[in-house]
Image (cartoon, rainbow, N blue to C red):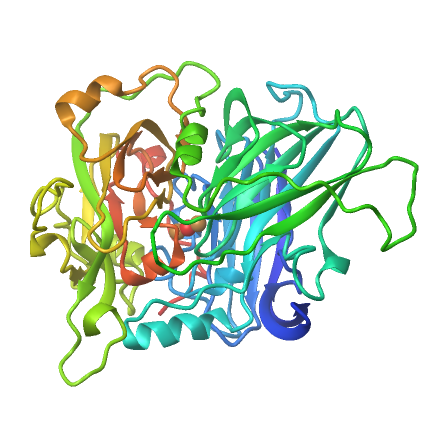
Length: 544
Ligand code: C2O
């Protein structure tokens, strides 16, 4: 196994998008940021130097960080932020994961422009469980904001209103042909006829779940979130922010140009969303070079309508682990978390921008998560500093949520703002029912757990019913992911073994929802002996 060294300089960079030059925060001046490529078993050492005027941290999304929670990155959870002028070296090893992950800033809304791909190839002398592709291409879906995203979220937080939406969706940082002043920079992927290409899709957008399709081409899904899946052929993908999907695409069509297009899946009726379509071009090398600017218009794929939940279900139910799985049993911790939006009263003497003069909030089990500011949670835990958090996060909601009820108890929609963790014994088998609520807006929530992959045993609509729905669990080949889309007006059940000590954030990967508090954290205790314990903190760990 190798050690890879990288230097990430976080800096302000002028970039031109949608006809204007804007100064945005990038890593090494690149948007998207640099792609990191490793083999399973390799170690990464990434020196992050902060030359910007904002605090920053970097999170390695989906990396297990086994015993190295100090390198996980969420601000005030596993570390204090890297201040302007400061630096921190992230050091970790990739174990038991092959495929596509990514990295992004985990501080305010900086990840709008601070993100990149993390590609994990198989170990030397081992290969993919599918046709070896001739070409491998990372494809990062994102959002472009004309305004500074940090200012967007600050303005919204001041009044409790919903923040503005993005101005364009992007593929590898570019909006594509349907936007003003953009077509010269549209992402183009050159291919040859008769090849098999591995396209590695990553949804890096802040707030947009996306459908993706390629004109005239089918895609065979072979992996999600750096876990192999049974090959599954589809014409549409759905990726929530945080999720990755690896697909094989065979270039078996007449030599021409074909659009890869992405557009929002926005299940909420009435709420504003970025309704633009971003495109890249899959361009066959046909030896028929037309003069620049005169190429024939590429073919356009059909994408589902923005509210086509049926298309989402068809995609997610097609995902299965490649091989039979040994499901962790028996369950030691049977947890039930509601996920959804709520409303806070407006503080006395203030004017608030939420519905009917309230402030938007969001919660799990009606606890709206608050980050500490003087210590990171992990540091407070490891050093026994009291007063930073409590460990009384409820295992079940205060009252059972019920879609059929006429009146929803206040205890489910007026959240309590607090820093509450749930403690797990090392090695315990944890099952969580994630029950979406639709108290203020029905939404599909991409829920991400740091430090773990989990099996998705079942998903469904309406109220989760333990008696009836347990019978539907896939205990044979459930997909393994780090981010699960909890269906709109529905639920998902996940299971994992708590064998990675540390403090691990659990949150909705729609950035607006984590901003409103749709998060909690697990505190996983050390087990016996060194190999079941968290490593000591690095000497250069930033302090608050
Ligand atoms: Cu991809 Cu908490 O993040």
